Image 1 (tube, helix red, strand yellow):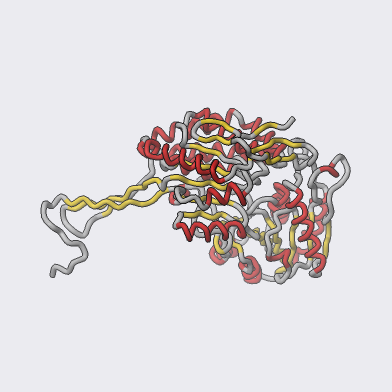
Image 2 (spheres, rainbow, N blue to C red):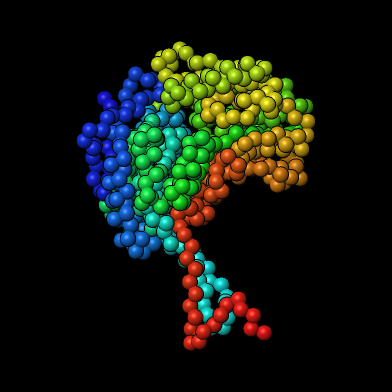
Length: 495
């Protein structure tokens, strides 16, 4: 029996009158409706933004250590609810249970990290060029934040954005992806239980074209923090430019794993299997390209295909599942179109490329692990983000060639290189044009205490997580205190 996911505005749960229902369905069995949620129009968004605006003055004056106590309490509640939320993620989004637990654990870790910043939120004191004058900088909250989040990390990404926003003294309106309204609802319930004042945390459900557009274009929203596709991010960036709204965009990736001849091949094999097929490739950091040294190419590719063909495909709620379904039919059709494009353009389909069948999978959006060989840089499957369990393999003859091919992409999020040569590893980390570089580890696996984000079409220069994540949600204020008792003029030649 499906559940109703309601909006949360000014401390109250509601289903607005007249709103039509959006259905979220089980990606492993599309016949099952997991939840319904309201498709909230602009007047509903208006009320949520107004509630956040009204709550902002008192929340910004709340001492940061007190804010940290509430954020930490939210983390403790998430920890208590971890197993239940992991099963919900597996049911509504499709992610395997082990990955669902990791999703929630990221939210817990972010709560603890952000809570600690309540005792820091450092500014600077710097010397003045004039006597008897003090120069200080402070972080100030931005104001009302609109958080627009995707379906692939339905608990972690709202936490990454939300906890940093809250610890800095902002209020927010969360607009989650319409595929995961129940996951977002349960996340906000944990924040409600933690005791945040009414209006500080708000949740509105709805389609991006209706609810998301109303939030992004609202004149009383001070910041939009978006995670999603580069195409939608470009539209949001253009809207925010017209309204002079601060904007942080975390978008796509076309991430490459480089395997050099001297690599630990067993380790590299484990890395590419996890990077390419974890979450069925539905991560912005997923390994989509494998650049493989020609001297180890044939043997490595054969072992990779043998391992990939034996991945256990099933629903996220099955503890044995290693490869989960795609989230919905549009995503399934997108992936299958890329499989067709790879074949049309001359790549060799080595394994997969079909809808997985049998064992009741015919009612879900399951795709076999898919590997293409002989992929060239001009092909769409080499250049475009697929967001599915599809891996493109290309032969290389040197580190320099590998770096050139890694950088031959409109994206620049994550990358990795497998080698036992420290000199090669350090050269790669310097030369690869990406926000994240791993050595002897897969392209997925970010840690919350470090900056997360990329370059080129991956983002607009901001970073999430870590201490740098505070920069999105704060403005710098510079204060000069002159206690000389006389007029002093800075930057005036007094010689």
